[in-house]
Image (cartoon, rainbow, N blue to C red; front, top):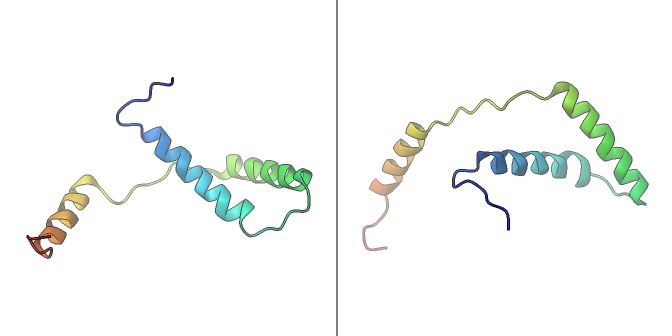
Length: 79
């Protein structure tokens, strides 16, 4: 069993990273063997580590509150 905190923002970061890998490395390619996959992943990792920067979140919690309030005003009450 692995204990993870209730608010595990690091899991979100991992999911984002794997989403990037999926889109930029895995999906657009047709590999013929595992060596190609390994080499492509290694090249991506080297390039990514050299250029990676923290994500700059622009959507704040107050933006979310505003959005949910607007959606709530337009949602029928009997749903």
